Length: 378
Ligand SMILES: *Cc1c(COP(=O)(O)O)cnc(C)c1O
Image (spheres, helix red, strand yellow):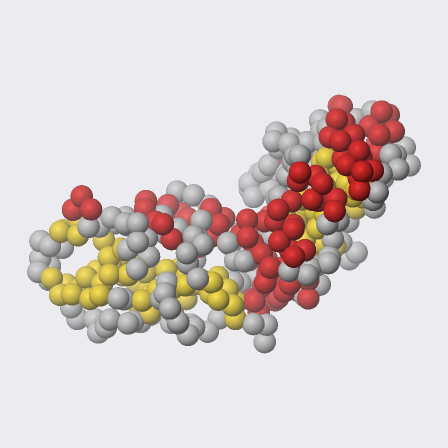
């Protein structure tokens, strides 16, 4: 990724390199079991990267499906002219069901009553509803328990207003070094697939794996994999896959620089006092932009290829960075919060570890007031 993109307006910006998304999607295709489709999961505004540009890039790179959490997220993709199949991964209620059917979003179903409701809504619109049945093989969140599957379910799926298109589950421990629970869930899922197959009711698309499961266990690929973090390359699942590169950079600027003596208190609560004369640089990003407040006195940034500490509290709109007097820095210097500068790099996971969370929470937490710009596929 070019190290510093051109800045207009607010210097605090998220820059998404669509070339990297394109390469990541192509790499995924190269490692999938032949015949396995790729669903690019673009929920939560594409994990904070922007759902429409990411979806368009992923589709051009060969992703056959898109996944969202909410009908509303699917509608935003349709409004942008995206015509590929889209699955709503979460539970849909009320008007969300009508919208999904009207815009050909496939719905996730795991209750008989919901299946009836969806069939009735489809009949009202005079069109079929695309349905994926979700089985809870051990995630314990949403899904039909395998024990609940019976002939009545099969009958209901035969409804002429329902197009029974997919069957899926979700793993609870796909990034756990110990594979035993995943193997237990996989076996339960295989039994469910066999139940449908033996009743001549196996739908065309059986799917189970998220990024970590798909990378680690090719036996989970089935007809399609659902890849979120792995196309943005947010999480360290990519450790053994250097081809997967981070696609997001979060940068700002030094907007104010001052020389201070030893014993100078910084920020709310004066949680930090300088130990020696130094520069303090103010950078206009704060917790309201998604830079976690827990990084107070803990975070680090890159300026001119060097790493410097965040001192004092992270406030709503600003942080303060300490720089030795021997280092040549200036107002206007680029500040990297996430990304590379010279030989130094701050990965999303570094921020996440220091903040006691996961990378997904960091990237989805980047606030709407942070302008996003895109480097095109080159
Ligand atoms: C978010 C989500 C995914 C994508 O998971 P990653 O770990 O980001 O690849 C896959 N399946 C379901 C059901 C999801 O909700």
